[in-house]
Length: 129
Image (tube, rainbow, N blue to C red; front, side, top):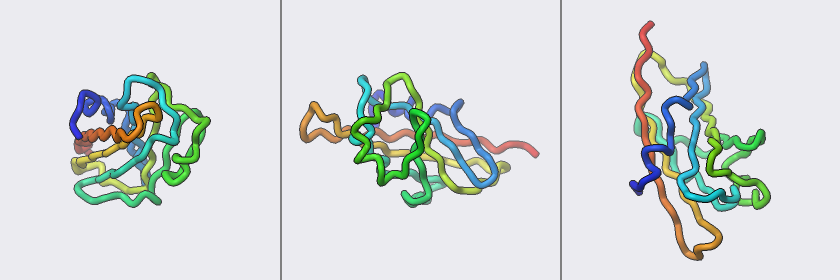
């Protein structure tokens, strides 16, 4: 699960915490652009708790998708230089640190049978009041 893309999967500078919502910038863990149909958000945990897929949305190319819609998006590409955004409907206490871990699976269409698994993590620091 750890690979060369793990450190850059969740860039800390692309995290936005708002009341009732967490938005994570996500970088494509692959060397070429891919259609969204081969991208799977396998698991997101916040403070060790798994976030249900229904509580997340995936945004890219000025479009918002539920996680279940990704596999039908053959015409939408995730370009290697672009960040996607994973939005989570979750209130976080900004005065406490939070650990976040994301596992993303890719199924490159030109390498039959390959599942490229990347797990990245970050810690949100507590904000003083």
